[in-house]
Structure formats: C-alpha cells, structure tokens
Image 1 (tube, rainbow, N blue to C red):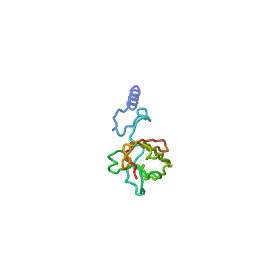
Image 2: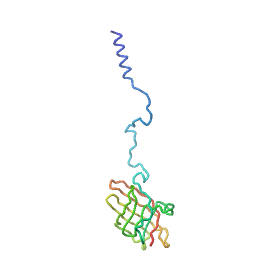
Image 3: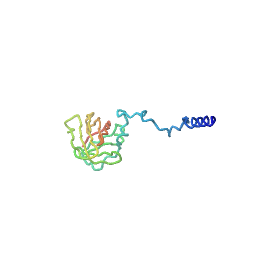
Image 4: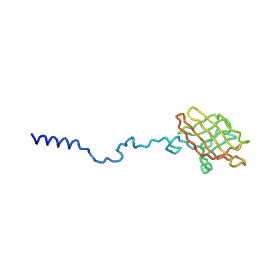
Length: 164
C-alpha cells in the first residue's frame, strides 16, 4: 500500500511536469502584453493608403496641374495627381481610378502658393505647394494630404507643374 501511494504520487508529479520543449518560432503565440501597439508608431504611406501612379488623363485637354511623388517620377510621367486646373481631379487610390470634383483651387497666376481641396464619400484630399519656377509652366514643390473616412491620414511630398 505504501508503494502504491508513492507510485501514484510519482505518476502525478511526472504527469503535471511542465513540458519545456521549444516550438518552432512560427507556431509560438505571442503574449499580448509584449506586442507593441502604439498609435504613434510610424509606417510608410503605402501601408496606410495605397497611392498608385497613372498616365496623364486623356480627359484633360487644356490647362492642367499634375504631380508625382518626386522629380524623377515626374520626369518619367508617373503621376499620382492630376486636375484640369479648376474643375476635376484624378487620382488612383487603393486600386481605384478616382474622378473627383475640386471643391476649391487657388489662382496660380497671382499666387506663389498652390492650394486645392477635393472631397468625395471616401477621401478628403488637400494639395499644397510653393512655386519653385515660373517659365512656360509653373513648377511646384509641396505635399498632398489624404484622409480616409476611418481617420487614416497620409501626407506625401509632391513635385509637378501647372500649365496651359
């Protein structure tokens, strides 16, 4: 009887012993306390809202403004924004080609600063720029800010021109 109790106690001890076997890292669950989930962490703009390049819109026939992310993309005609200088703006966001009405646009002939506001059901877009050169076309350097209805905001540098 004494041995039965000892045998039972040994069995219970062995069966309750924690298994220290390491699992492959891909199957290890992370502790939720160890995961950094800080809203101030920065991510690239493309992770928040996918802004895609496109060719110059065929709908634009006369005066226009068109911008790329940088001078190199601009020279290679990889635009992220275009408008017909006052009425309609064009962008490609999250795989969709958007045609939107301009709410407001500054008069580029009288100002050294560019300002445009566009809004639809999904996005609020603001284009701001400073004139860096004025010849046949006016070159601008600035930013485009895109805000989704869920509160996601991205700010992208732009380079481009407005011309007739």
